[in-house]
Image (tube, rainbow, N blue to C red; front, side):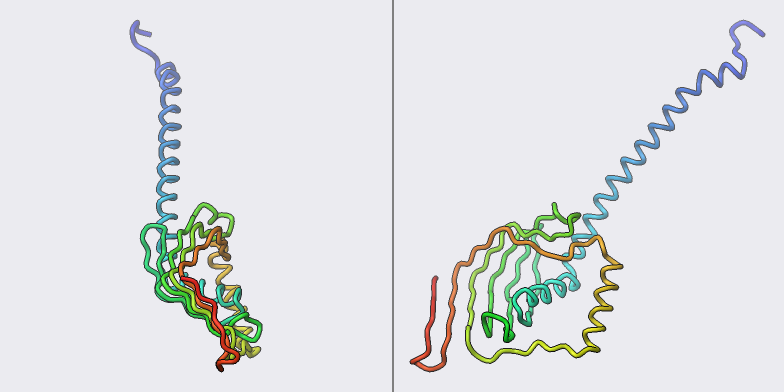
Length: 196
């Protein structure tokens, strides 16, 4: 062996730790990059879902079920994580406390921290006006067996396709600015509670 020259074996042995260090650095860097990209892509996907018609149609039946009513929700307008809705209307069933409920100028702050717990958390829920009529005709919430079976099939398919998406909502605080509750059609029976 000539002095000053290394054999192939010793050169390979000297570069091996540096080579493994570079490989580990590339793997860790690539993993970190994938993690950051996954976070932003997941957030974009959730934002897109929240702004979709599918989310709005998720909210209406959930609200209706909670109120024992048939509910309609107006279009959502988003600013960051705050959602605005001009109109919510519900027609009460025989089990509801009201026959008609109208809610106007709704503002809700959605908190995404509990999404992985299966919850859409609403931290601040503000309502401009609530109008409720306690008496009057009630709707009948009857479902034919065929319709109920189709709904169960649809819910199963939805759970399979998006099982990690939250399927319930929790409200932490609510403020109502103006409320009016009325009952009775004749002067002897009529009454109201109003607060502005």
